Length: 133
Image (cartoon, rainbow, N blue to C red):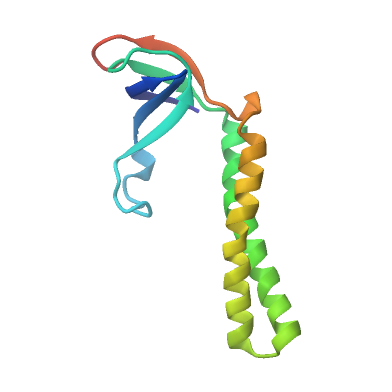
């Protein structure tokens, strides 16, 4: 997936890049109508320049799947566990919500392991000085 963004800060081999949301996201509004996203990526480029960034499409799909599937499985597993332990729907629902909250820690653990693997890192393909490319 090729995206173009503007470098807003650079320090210690990390760039903060502001990306415009794709047109496909324009009508969804699930993100609260935010039209820009700020992403930190490894690389070197001057502040104010525009860069073309390649984000491995298969990895984006896998990461998205993990971000949705793990909380869903934890929710369902918590509900099943809650029904087995308490036999009351309200307590089972609370157990499911607690387990879904615990999925945040599972995702953080997975993220910390995947963050240092090159296949998950976006790559800078080109740096354009000045005006938007």
